[in-house]
Length: 409
Image (cartoon, rainbow, N blue to C red; front, side):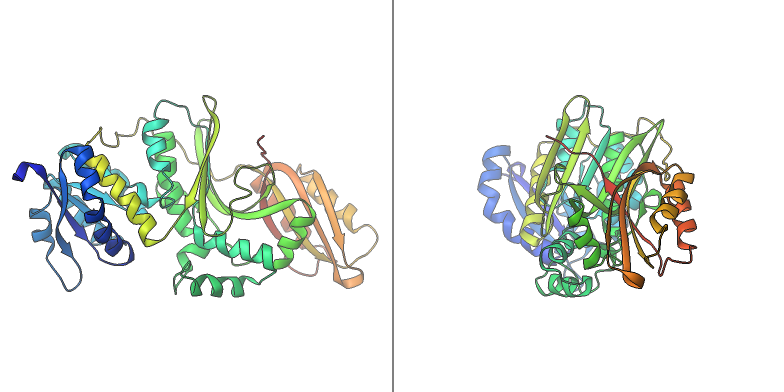
């Protein structure tokens, strides 16, 4: 076999995903050779105790970055591309912080920067946005892009478990890290939505422009009342066009049964893409795991071996808005007195909010009032909540969760 027939692969990181990739590559080498005419070979691995970056890059045509974090991952990726090497990464934090600099380096050096595994694991949403829907005018991308939180919420809904108990089970099963902070606070999903927004709308989006909140305050009670209202709860990432700009956010949201993401349970991920040209499509599958993520990395490697153009420079810089319209679920612990609902409805009405549905449970000082309000600007809704929280019959801080009203047939 001549040197021209080899395709040399350097690997940075040998953890869960890195080791799974190192195992998968030789097992798929024959198929890749038949497809591309080149045989991929792992020619170097960098770990904390093995190899050097310089050696790995020098002996590679493509570098796979699976060390995670911002540094030295950024430095390594830039150095590899400046040395004329393709780069494949699964690092969503890296791309959500430094994506524009990295994509620019790929263009300037005529190499590929591939990152399918950075969002939703094996679900091919990056490739669909970059290639299949490259000519479509995307209006909105909505996703369950964190399997840890989806598993926790599924367990809470199906078994009545508390948040703490469901998180402990997720950790025991390997769906959650020992430190799950990035997952449960929504930051992991925010990084992924920044990347999806960049591709969907062809405009720079940094993670700091993504408003996010997590699931730590969700209670089994919320899920019970939601079931009475015909709703299910998910941690939802949304990127959408708003006027002349865009809005990107991650937050818990209730969905009606007709929404394509409503039935996505457990550690699975799913992304819905909406466009006038296609109506909507939904992609779903495992969102995490060593073998699954390694498969997405391997797919990127094959794509880089038969390279199309790299991620282009943004066509425009659109403003990113934080105050957008939404429906909301509102949970109030109240003393059951005459006129309670009327006063709450009056304060909502002062901000332009109207009530879609109401459930009341309990009597006396243990009453609970749960409602869904029709869409209004987030700032106006929370202004009403602030007024409501000051009423003397409200016994604790109100809880509010967004509701996504769209349903599809």
